[in-house]
Image (cartoon, rainbow, N blue to C red):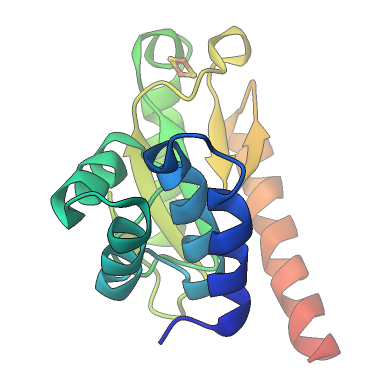
Amino acid sequence: MLSDRLKAKFDSVIARYPLKRSAIVPLLLFAQDEIGYVSDEAVEEIARRVGVNPIEVIEDIGYYSMLHRQPVGKFHLQVCTNISCMLRGGEKIFEHCAKELGIEHKQTTPDGLFSLEEVECLGACCGAPAMQVNYDFYENVTPEKLDALLADLRKKDQGSRIKD
Ligand code: FES
């Protein structure tokens, strides 16, 4: 069940676009931020509101690696292994990440803290190898920097649990 808050957000976002279907991606991002992924219900609701077939919304989701149809970890790690990153060690970063977390591409750790995905270009080639954690970018990543990042994220999670 989508919240009233999310439905109100949908209304305000759609009102900003002369062509309703142009709002699909922002609507998907808001839905994902609230639900944790893009549920079937969110797809149906967005399609109905912008006047397209749900399959068109699903096609948009398929194009963008930051949109997920299944729940992902609290920290979703996307490691680029496209050409610039590959030439600067992106594949090693992905392998290191997989080894450290004990998961593979599109898997989530049993505690739900981390999920991992190997992705195409993140648009950060000048800082290759690059990766993204949720909405944050990390460039010139090395195995050592990655270890420090994972430790920071674990600490951040512990801190948020203490506050809760
Ligand atoms: S190739 Fe990795 S960010 Fe562009």
